[in-house]
Length: 95
Image 1 (cartoon, rainbow, N blue to C red):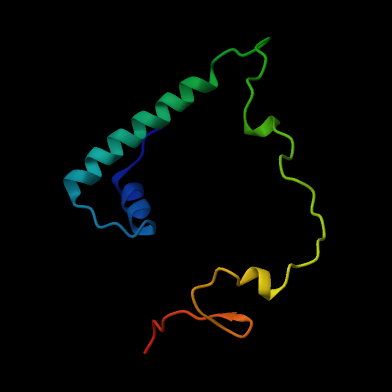
Image 2 (image 1 turned 30 degrees about the vertical axis):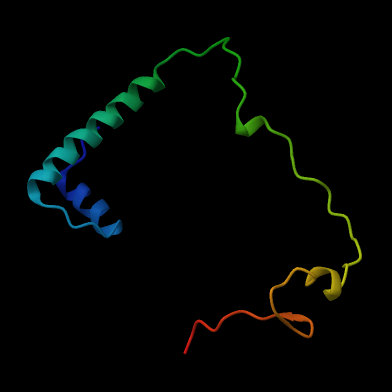
């Protein structure tokens, strides 16, 4: 599949990249080469090949949500360097 320099220019615009004409020619050739390789992979016979393990075959690995009572501000703020009643006190960053 041939990628034209116009298509490279559109892609660069979407990616907010400013590229010069020699680089457009280079990228056009490289992207065309990559897409030609992918087209070759479409022709590979995978009949009888078992799928390898991957992210698509994972079960949910997250734990179930469990409702628990909050320990409260005294426990939560026990190691806070500074606090104001039930809140953390941090240095001001906006003037």
